[in-house]
Length: 256
Image (cartoon, rainbow, N blue to C red; front, side):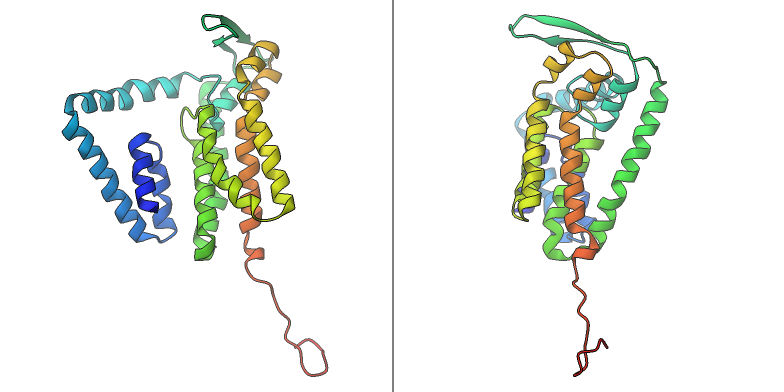
């Protein structure tokens, strides 16, 4: 079932390919092989049914779409580097208003301006630091905890990948469900994260109402929810929680 779900997800959106990279780290070789076969079969079926449309879409996706997403930062992009770009560099964009045809031009002029290459490299460094606990936990947790580690990888992908829109926040639900089952404190974290996701749906409103730097800060509500849930998963999966040390005692009750 895991392989089937992964294959269908990749067939719908290409970026879930990054999820399959977790299987070798978790030493889930069977799921990796089955997922790979299903992904190849799904794409092959698309080319058999409609070869020209599949080819045209592939060319558009790997050339124009990726180039646009990497060069132009959207106000709706919830990825970490896109948020950093909005925070420290001047922005001009058009957002939709209450009416279908209503458009508003927003200009953010922060008191500082940072070179785009500096922003990208700062983002790469932060993403590398955030990747470390994901890798560590993937290599250390017991098999029964690997489900939660997979959800952590999904959250990391939402921070790292290009052009993550607000509707991608539906992928926070598995992590929320896992944390909800862990206790009252984790449920409070889930409620706050859910509220932040709700606020992220109002990004265009914040853009029209708030100047820089408050507007750019408000545009990252969804990213804050991802970071909060990821931190909660890491805390609940950290090695100190795996084993409860038991002191051995002699008949006198003294520690061994």
